[in-house]
Length: 284
Image 1 (cartoon, helix red, strand yellow):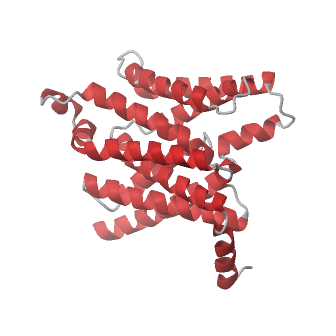
Image 2 (image 1 turned 45 degrees about the horizontal axis):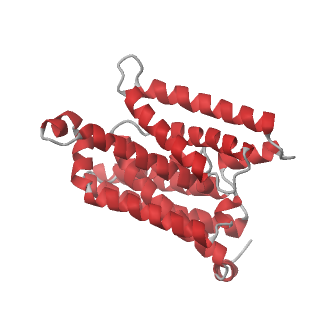
């Protein structure tokens, strides 16, 4: 069993390596962006879109691997963004509700991705590749400086969109019909939210894997809603929780050699339970 001094020493030792610092920076940025959109998606009862889009990204990643692309982002990102827009429009169809559309696309993309990886993969360890993609891998610890810069730029764009369009996003989140009646282009902002969510999903796949990435969106928002009532307060507290859990999960995974994605989600669950308990005390 490690004592405090040993853990602190190991942490200081690992932080001397650039790849650890890169992982912490990217993890914090992805967690921040996920939490901002998570509150909106949860309140609009469309939080499951993260799960559906992550499975679409998995299928696109499997197809990209067939062509041995050095950067699979050129296939995964456009496909996931397109799926986000189509899911949003299909969800507004009275014959096919949003949850049914997401479930259909989610299962279909997951099955096709796994089938493609089995039929055409040249890897000697297909099961290991699939498991790493679904539940997260060590790719977050092998980021290059260029990948970190790309993540910083895209995260800055996401945060800027949320900050500058905060009032319109707030209006569309709570009363879409009223927002449209007052001149807000609700459909355009819904599409923007879907596109930004797709971007976040693709960025977060290396951190938590395609099966766990939706937890980064849902858990911080639900945790914040247990103790805070205002929209702005929930967004801010959700961001704090998300970044804290991401950093804690990455550090713990490095110190104790546990899977990065699963450790982050476990931290989110612990914080969620703590906020549920705190919420009951506050309400009573």
